[in-house]
Image (cartoon, rainbow, N blue to C red; front, side, top):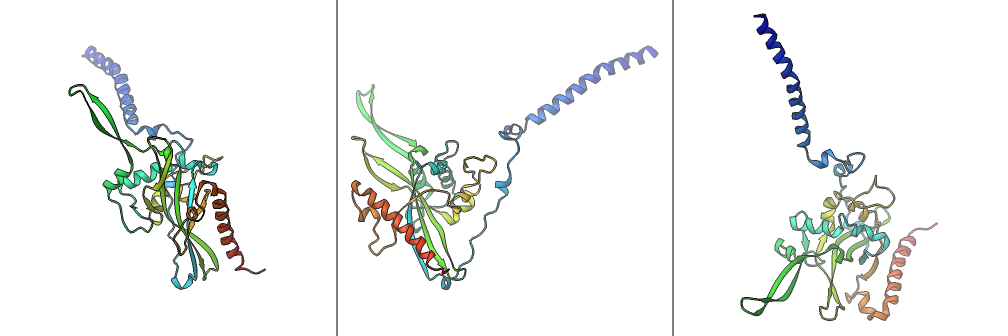
Length: 289
């Protein structure tokens, strides 16, 4: 009887380490079942402040308190140094708004007056390049037309149009500005000569509705990776460079129409700066010292 008891104790002693190892193995498997990005951080701390940030609603305005306003249209050229975050390779701005438009998270429009909303099919059609080519068919010994669809390269979007409203708030006695819409510009090139033909907006994003979406995406900030900010911050703080290409006028014409031709580029830029200074002086003259 004693010998059987000793045998049983020795068997349990041998099995105990195995059970401990099995439990350790189970814990390892459980930990590795978590998402990789939750286990291996590409940072020193998990960043959650941006996702917890809330977008403040616009301050209420009364029509009676707005005695003056003016619409302006600007061009943001992403090739300028301050605008390089728009083409930050890991997440270009065009990719953000394109994906949000495809998913229906933000609504996009055909026109800058925000009257004709685009359907998901129309949005998908805008986000691909349609190319045709002749391919030799060895079975029929004839050339056949083949149509291929390729997604637009975000690096090809080099400009954005911004429509905004400048206004004077009589209640607070200050000048204000609100962005109304943003549109990516697509350049069309002649296939035969390779020369630039024209540029048109692909679609218009209604900015007041898109602020919530833009507040969830980081924007690269030079010099401090710990506080990158969001695209909402960039537009609200106006941390971009642009030039005016149109202001509201009785003929509804752009500066290109008034100063037509490639040799008139300097005149267009000078007129753009004149409009900027006119806005500055208009607000400055409201005050007396």
